[in-house]
Amino acid sequence: MLMTLLQVMEIVVLVATGGYIGYQTQGHFSLTRSQHYIERFNSGEMRKLRTRVNNWIERGQPLDKIFPEKPPLDDESQLDLEALRLFSNFFQELGTAYKYRTVSRAYIWDVFGQIILRYGEDLAAFISEYRIHVNRKGLYIDFECLIEDIQKMDKKKQKAMRNTTWFSDHRHDKND
Image (cartoon, rainbow, N blue to C red; front, side, top):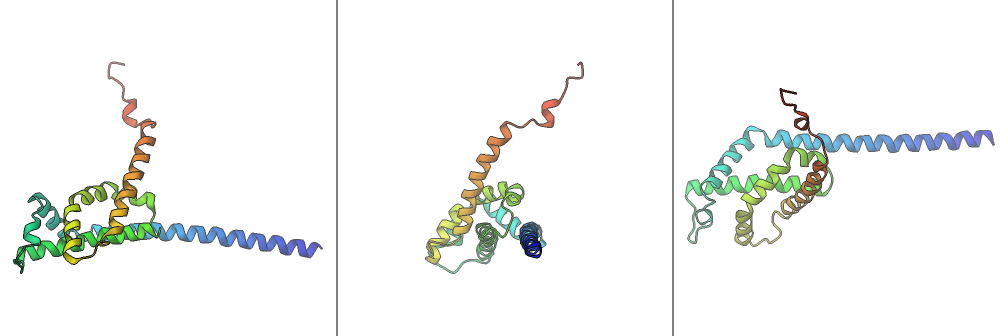
């Protein structure tokens, strides 16, 4: 009887330890994967794409040059289209990782939240037109879902932040 009780306790300890190690491993994996996206976003290649996309946005997002009625595209428009596709693909991949929880959702919100919202808005017209152009309604759908989730999380975080005391709330007048 005593041996059986010890064996049961051993099994319980082993299962609990295994579960904890699995939980820790998953957490480490999702943080590492999240950091990978940050490193990739800040890579030289992505900085070049981001610069080209930002320039396109600053020019007023000229869709008629990227999707002309009479192809072919001129060289600059071809480069813009390629940059927009690759840049949007990054957010699509991030959205897919977010959907399958292979990245830390809170970490992604902290680091990419405002970037996702900004580019989601700035690239919306391009994505809509590109979906029509290639006849794929579901193209970049995980990017779209990511935007929606970040907006929801943003509302929750902003609500929670209203009840937070900030360092700046404790500033004192020098005459105090």
